[in-house]
Image (spheres, rainbow, N blue to C red):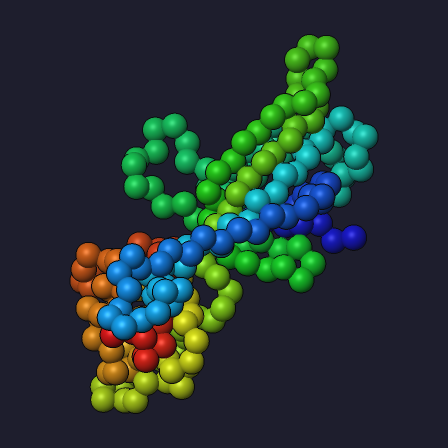
Length: 224
């Protein structure tokens, strides 16, 4: 059976014991203002919140669970590796430090996510107080897997891609992405970036977006 893995560049954490379940949740926010003449129940989607994956892992250093390594790592060593992969901020890190995107893989599930919360409970110790087992509860959040924007930027005056007239999509900004560039990639010249900024409750179209920012890309019929 393949283990659940979390990876960040060359760093990887493989679960010694796979989780019993993974909970997925999504929050939607609707505009409080209903367009003139619209019927109740037809409120406009304002923002699709991040999709959250929550699960618990058991980290064992007692030797009861067979390790995939020649020498079974200690609980502290496994937790240190997990924190490094997740990019857990350490004491003294500057406010605004970027939490890295990690890749979650298990079976058919493969997602790029960021750490949202982490809780560790040590559940077994040696008589001397050395941790032998811990339960790790975590939540990871990221953009919905319902389409991304990719490919070269649209040329000036180019018509919008066909996807721009379909269902709403989401895209997650990467380092160096700007709202203006993502808007051109998604809509060509058919949508003013300022409209996309307003749709996503962003204060400005200027400057790079923080990596990991999730944008809702509405179809053109609903974007303006």
